Image (tube, rainbow, N blue to C red):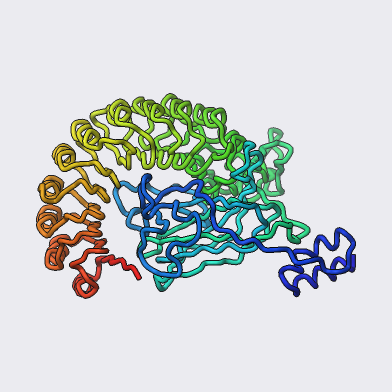
Length: 605
């Protein structure tokens, strides 16, 4: 034992190779240091999954797939199409009318807004992870490793995720490129699957990632001998044997004598006050507290504590068993967030169906973003068990077949629907999403071929539509847009970014401005035909405008932008990146005149 302790001390002060080989030396009884383990350096081989990206599904520009392989841009800095870019940044999207309210009980330590999962060639015990950030760094808040080999032919069993590093969102003072290499912890299994989670809320513009490097060794390094047990969301046992009373004041029994209540000062507190205190606990803490004594078990299992459940922060540990434990406590559940959960077999149709049958009748909001366990049968269960559902988010559920979306037609009260990166088709849209004439939705990207047909349906059946996201709808024409804005005059948000078939020469943008006086957000990103007359029409017809993106236009001058800023006092975001007539001198001049407006001007080194 003395030799083992000395060897451990020696390895801490020695080289990395000595530390990695010391454990083998102890186990084999050798007193000499074994040869140094070779550290493997590898770039990501494949992008497996992600929550969003700025690019499109049929292109490589600004897509997550750019993270596979060697760097394309680094060490250069700036806005490059060859990098990976997420869909949003800052707090602008949270300020929009389409943004849902935050869920209660979200842990303060959970900052993640987006993620990407990367597969590497060889499983290794990680010694370092390096992320090459080329524009507005600081968004990464967590790096995780998975025990499952994504290239294995056998189905995943006992999938385990370990956090290698976590931190808070940061705002780096400069947008210049950097190599982010945090100190990571050692794990007890080899991995070739990493997950990066990001939060861009503090950034002034889109963060851009170029490549990810995984360094590690094939042989297991020496780890700590003992680890503290971690209580997770699955440790929710309500066994009566584990519930005890504690000493405290007295109560009067049936014989008239005072007896000990066992609840201490809690007997003096009103029930509602205890409930209010418990409402500030996170879900795992609430479940742990329920195991402490009978009184707190009663309080912690009160259905009013479970009217909102955000299980997204616990995606790595959530299983059918977790839902089973919560099922009896949430008969009054109104808002449920299962985003990111259930992948790689963690949730099944059986567990999902059982939970919704028990907790779905009062559900009004269901978030299922990036839930790849979903099948057509799952959506059928949703339509049968959630009659009052008003909000449904299926963002990035790209493995659902088109026929699955027909079940949405049974949700008669649906008001908000997100179908970003799904495989819904025009015929399915007609029969499901837009069947109800009073349907008022926040509709995101639909992966279909003829957007003019969709625009026509919306104009005819959704006249109270508030928000519409048609980002990268490449075949929407001026005819479809004209029909849309003529029928949906209540629109407050309209995203037409990267819709190249829309031409200003047809007058479609001026017609848009005249028909949408309530407009607060308009994205015309990468439409090179936007001109001064369009901006001037927006200035005179849309006084409530708050967010405007005209990135990439060549025909807008500083004079028209000044008129817009004068006429739209609520404007807080104006993106003029790559607008050839708007140089930094104009941006600085307008920023001085209108200091409350965030003028964005991207650059390429």
